[in-house]
Length: 117
Image (cartoon, rainbow, N blue to C red; front, side, top):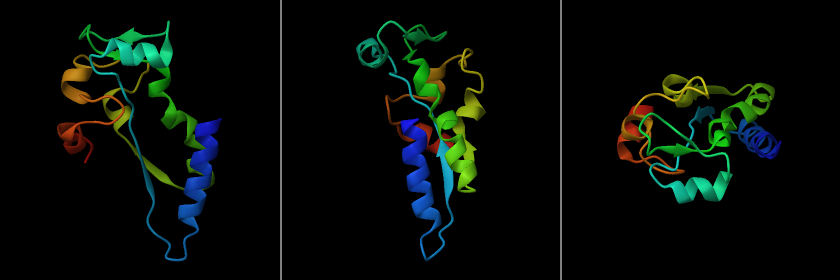
């Protein structure tokens, strides 16, 4: 609920600027890359790994896009989803998730920025 509330406030603020800026939500996800400790800090007992076997993630790191859905709809904000493009089903992360599609922790590295763009 917190993500939706803060997203609602931010999107509502942006959509009501007098300059009427173009607003689009770019939706991502995150992993802890190969850092098990980072994942354990965020989701003790719920850590998942992918076919890379050293690529760890917490289930909630896939969900913020879903949590923001009502806020986007209410404020008529379109979105582009990198998450849906590379990892559309939560329980089925793509092969090579951390070596090909996400090589950072909470923020992607340069080559992932290029993929998103």
